Length: 407
Image 1: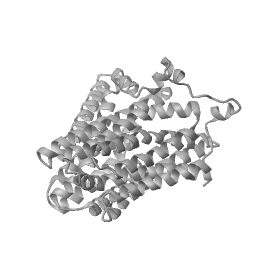
Image 2 (image 1 turned 90 degrees about the vertical axis):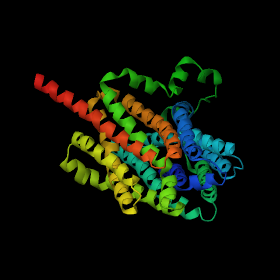
Image 3 (image 1 turned 60 degrees about the vertical axis):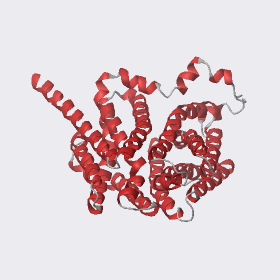
Image 4 (image 1 turned 180 degrees about the vertical axis):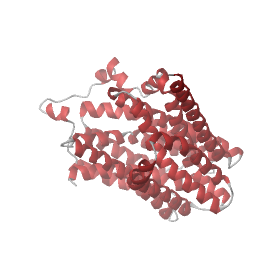
């Protein structure tokens, strides 16, 4: 792996470790402030909100001014966000830390663009995109494990750790990361000045608008079913991630170490499923449409089994949920992509990404409010999202069959 690829891989890995490290530790850290379950899930939501808002902005800035400055600034911002969060002495600083980190988290698409820029051919481009996915998957395994094992030292220690990790990443980027944007490299002899006026013109503001893909989704009636299913799927999983540590602590009395192992287990299954089982088993024996249709009841059932206050049933439910989630994430995207025209693929992916981001904002807020009423309500709600998605698919396929018979 070249130095350039290595530093981008490490950037994505650190971002993913940060996302994963929060899940098992956050409730126990926030508890030291005497805060509620809703505040815990609000911290998940505020991160997702500012990541959603910053992603198109950072992408547009990296297209105009280069990948290198955007990545370096965002990496150091990530470090600052973690330091503010870890050193917080009031709940307001918990939110400030998550907002800073959320803004910087929009750099994932910029890092991915960097990997695409440096690819010499289509095959290497595919490999580089896979490399980004592998970094994220590895981070989602390491993050919860590190969070669980470091939290006994101090509830804030995992956040200091990932803050210094991001700081080291920033230092490496300053010395090792080269500019990769071909447009910026072609104009390297000309100095591109940062212009507020240019950034705030009508065309630039359109590029920065994160709500534009949502508006396109509302206008795209043939895809209502696909978009609804995708939104409900993300809503269910985001809700579970936000409350799982609170839930197992309340029902089974587990601390951050066990929660970290549970989440690392989820990460391992997702990576194995996508790396081996997806092509070698699922897609070999089943069509994508059948997988999408039949795995949603399994997805919903997984949540229902997790509600049962018996550890064995909880683990079985978690396994069912994780396997179905890993496959559904791929096949829902693929089925929507197959339905779309070739020249609209980028727009479709943007819409799906935005809907997933909105679900990651709304899901934790609803889950936190429901948890305060009854600890099992968020999981029941996630199950209902899964079964509702199944009913939408049932309606779509029923209409399709009637249309075929009519012909």
